[in-house]
Length: 151
Image (cartoon, rainbow, N blue to C red):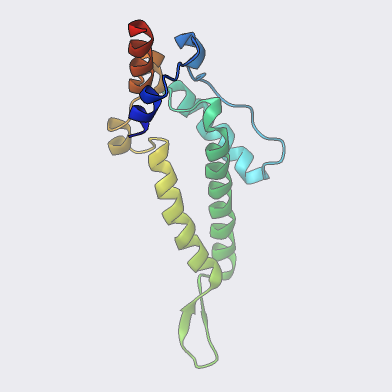
């Protein structure tokens, strides 16, 4: 429907150099305000992901959250190791401390984020790296180029 509307209005896309559309590959600069734990995980994962062409500067915001989450898990695990994961309530029942519940929640989020960065063999097999893609593989770009050739 949207493509039909574009064609109906005779919209012309400005000429674009396809190479200019390419996303840079490499390690994005590490933000200055990362926590100490997140800095550790940034330095640990960034070179590995960049070598596999799974990280680019365009991924910086999501990768930042990933590293902060890794740092948060590290803090929670240290707290649980020191204070235990369970406590006894006023009725004498054993229950999970809030830190334990938060750790389980963070682990679920981490697993989801790991999939985005291809951090398991199964996820990597389903991913295309940025080095495998060229800007001309974009179907929308191909449609616009074909439209320009016709006019």
